[in-house]
Amino acid sequence: MTNGGKTTLTNSLLRALPNCCVIHQDDFFKPQDQIAVGEDGFKQWDLPRRHEVPRGALP
Image (spheres, rainbow, N blue to C red):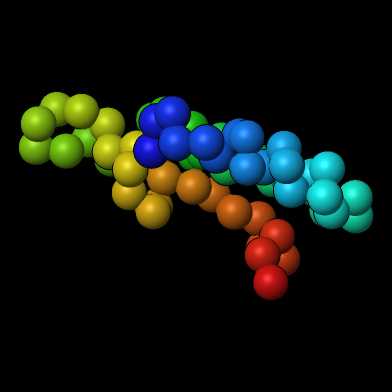
């Protein structure tokens, strides 16, 4: 979603919840050469498999 207020909401939550932190999804993208290419010739960045989440990073 573009221009949907995600950062504004995140910043509001950070101010309201002082013991929380933000984990940026972009920090977990796989290297470009590991992203599948679709039939249209474009990399499939929107697939769930595009992320590489370290073991133990999620509950």
